[in-house]
Image (cartoon, rainbow, N blue to C red):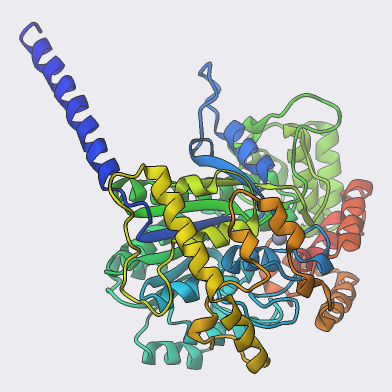
Length: 591
Ligand SMILES: [Zn+2]
C-alpha cells in the first residue's frame, strides 16, 4: 500500500503533465484555417430538441443535470427564414440551400436562386479546390439537405433527376438510404466512374479506399428507436471520415440527422429523442476526430425546428422524459404489433415500459378498432400525456436554431447569425477555386489566434467579393445553364451577398439581401402548392412513419400546417379523421 501510493502519485503527476503539454502542442499546431470541415445538420433540431435531449439523458440519480454534447459545443444561434417570397418559415430545401450556398431562396429550391439559376455550393467550391467531399445521412441520400450541398434543382421533389445529377458531382462518399431512386443502370454508371457500390451495412467492414456509393435502405435508414444498438448514422459518419481522411488535400463532409425532422412531423417524442441520441452519437464521433486532428473544424446546426415541440404542456410545470426511456419501438410499429395480437394490452404495456389505466386502455381499444394509423396516434397521445409533451404543428416553425462548433476558426460561428452567414463563413475558410492544392496561407506566427482567424477570414472575404462580377456575367451569359455544370469563376458569392460575409453585421446582410430575390415569384412554386394541396386532401395512412415513400411534395404551406395542427388538437384518436391520417397526408409538403 505504502509502496504503491508514491508510484500512483507520480503516475498521476506525469499523466497530467504530459497531457497538458500534449494539449499545448496540439493548440500550437492547430492552424487558423482548417484543412478539413465537417458540417452537421440536425434536420428539424430546434432548441426545444437539444433542451429536451438534455433532460431525456439526465441521470436522475445524481444531483446535477449532466451536460450533453450539445451543451459542450454550443457557440451561437442562427435565423432560418427563407427568401422573401416564401415568408418567415423555411422548409429543408431553402434552409439547406442557405447553408450550402450562403443565398436565401424559395421553399422547395435545391441550390437555385429565386430565378431558378444554380448557385455555387460549398461542396462544389471544395471539389474545385482539390478537396474530397462527402455526405452521410439517415434519409435517402437525395433528400433535400444533402441534395442542396451537391446539386441544383428547381424542386426537391425531382428525386430521380437529383439522383442522376449525383453522377456528375464527383462526390467521394455518398452514404445513406434511397435505393429506390437509383436504378440498376444508374448504379452501373456510378461503378463505371470508379465507385464501389454498397447496399448492406455489413459491407462497410470490407470497404475499399476510393469513391463509395452506399445505399442501405429503400428510402430512409431504420428508425434508431426500432434498432437501438445499430448506430447507423454514427457508423456511417465514422466510415465517411475514414474514407475522406485518405485524401491529402482535405475534405468537406456533410452529416445529417435527417429523421429528427420526420419524428417531429409525426409529433412523436419517443422516436425524436432516439433520433437525437443517434445524431449526438454521430457528433461525438466527429468531436473525437477533431480532438485527434487539430486541422479539422466541425460546425453543427439545424435547418429549422419541427412540430413546435414544447417541454411541458397544458399549464403544468412538469416534463417526465423517464417514460420515454423504455419505449422499445415507434408508435407505428407498436400499433402494428397490437393489431395482430389478441393479448395486445399486456404486450403494449411491456413495450411502452409504463402502466396504462382502464380509461386509457378503453381509448386505445377504440383506436385499435380503426386501424394501425389511428392506434399509432392514440399511442403517441398517451406518451405525450405521460411525459407532458406539447406540439403546436405537424410542420415547421420559424424559431432560431442553435449553432455548435469546435476546431480551427470555431469562434467565427459564435453569437447570433443568419443561416447564410454560416455558409459564407465556411466559404471564407475554403481554398479559392482554381488554386487547387494550394493550402490557405498561414498568417504570421506572432499574431494571436483570433487575429489569425479574422485576418484569414477577411482576406478571403475581399477575394470572394472581388470575383462577384464574374458570377453575374456568367449568369447572364448562360441563363439556362443546368445543375452540375458551373464554371469555375462562378464559384463565389454573388454581388447581392457581400455584406453577408461580414460577421459583425449579420442584420445588415438580411436587410440588403436580394432585391433580386424578391422581384419574381417562381411560377413552379404555385404549381407545387396546388399539387401539395390536392395531396393533402387524400389521406395516405400507410406513410406515417415513412414520409419519404410518398410522392413528394415540397413547399411550406403555413395554412396547411395550421390546419394540421388544428386537426391534431381538435380530433380524438378514435375519430376516423384522426390527426395521424391528416398529418400523414400533409407531411411531405412540410419537410
Ligand atoms: Zn421537415
